Structure formats: structure tokens, C-alpha cells
Picture 1 (cartoon, rainbow, N blue to C red):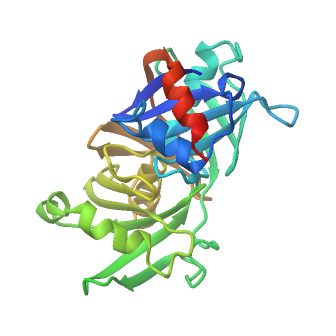
Picture 2: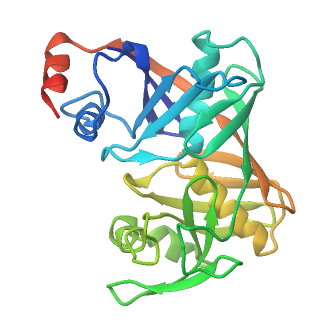
Length: 284
């Protein structure tokens, strides 16, 4: 089982081509591969296979470290895009890939950076079935806190929460407050959570809690959800989103079509040992 480890703003994924796998990926196998002590270690797995429709370079499937499958990841998609180009799947700088969230169309700028055309965000979706058309809502969590938020569907569900005070935003204990929002009954498919505040009309600071992951140094879809919420509040686009791992740029138009620009780089390539493969094959 050959693989490559890539990272984007500290958000690291294990990239595996389908033909390099001697078995199918199950939740238990994903968990073991992503385990930092018992496996390779990473924020998830990017599984690449040939496309099943004409006009696409590949199909991308994204697995969270808890074994669940994600519809989309902005950082993961950038890593997969840059890998496809470097591994020779395509020699084009513009192409399309399939994801569970639909078509993603990247434009590669150089050896590190690309822009992803992410499609159109939605404010109403089945991921927040009780929500208003504008996506604005309010929930109370078990700890008694009330959270006002902007629901945004950007390929996966985002709950963007504006925190105007700088100290409050930085002092939030995401590991404590995140799960109560992620698993709230208002979100039947769970939700990612972005806490953000404005630094300037076109610049925001954001902290991200991802479903199936927890607090993360960077999230492309999380940054997109926060940026779109900021624009809906009257902010300017494109928006620079300052994350713990670095900065991403999100461009949002009046119809909520948006693009995501950032970098992704390889860390190392490797091959699983026979002993590790035997352990994985023994898992259901």
C-alpha cells in the first residue's frame, strides 16, 4: 500500500490511490490508518480512483479520522488536486474532479497554489431542516449557552458563529463547546462550526471545529462558511481568512458562487509494512 502524506496550513491528509489498496476502506481501517500511534497518522484519507463519467480526471472520496465519509474538504481537495498534477493523472492546469458534493474545478497557478471553483453556497438545506430561507438561526446547547449562527451549505454543512470580541474568540475552548453544536438535534447530519470575527472589511479571524475531527488548525470549507457569513453581514469580498495554520482567500459573488485559493504541499511518500497491512486486513 503506497501512499503520500500532504498538508495544507497544517491540515494533513494521507493520499491513497484505489489501485494501491489491497482491500476496501472500512471505518475501522480508516481509523487505524489515521491513528498517529498505531498507523500513519493524519486528519483524514483522500481516496483517489478513476472517474466514472467523461470529462473528469478522477473521483475523490474523503474520509474523516473517525471513519465517517465527508462530502468535501477545501484543504483536502487542494491537496488531492496538486497530487493529481504531480503524480501525472493530468498535465492540465484546469480540470474537473468528482466529489460527493459534486463537481470541483481547480485552476493550478504554480507548484504550491491553486484556486478551487466550489460552486454556489446555499443558506437553506436538509442539513438544517428547520431553518429559515436566510439560514439565520439560534440554538441552545446542554451547557445553557445560546448560539446565534449563520447556516451555510458549501458542499458540507457549516454553522458560522460571529464572535465580535477578540479575547472571547481566542479563549473559546472549542473541544468543550464544539461537540454540543456539532451534535445538536437541529443538525441531523451533524455540522462543522466556524467561530469568526472581522479584522477589516475584507479580512476575518476564524477558528474551526470540524465534525468527525474536532478543533483543526485549518479548514477550507470552514473558512468558506465563515467568509460567506462575513459577506452576508456586509463584509467585502474577496475575504482573507486568518486561521491557526495560515491564511486562505475566499471570493464570494452576489449569487453566492465562491472560490477558494490556497496552497498545498507534499510531506513524504511511503509504503505500508507487511505487518501493518496484515493488521488492517484483519479489521472488519
